[in-house]
Image (cartoon, rainbow, N blue to C red; front, top):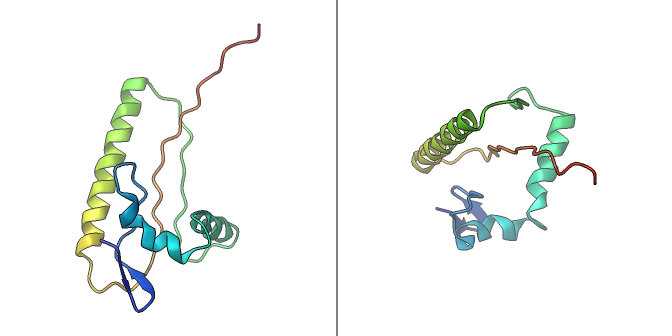
Length: 110
């Protein structure tokens, strides 16, 4: 849960299609807009710290296996949220980003 204490947000903020806007609002109120997190990530890609971890995998996969990948990421996301919820003390803010974006061929010309 995200709370505000002495002007600082504490807890976990998540961008989950099932999460309510109220749970995220504290974090978004502290930034000029929600793209601030993306801007920080882009800056860190250009100048990563030793402890930063960036990875991606561009793949070609069957639809059935893609569903397995999605389920594994959902499971990982739930496990991470549970770990964060139980973590004490809150010492470090971090951004964890999990995405699956598919590229579908559009209709052919004419």
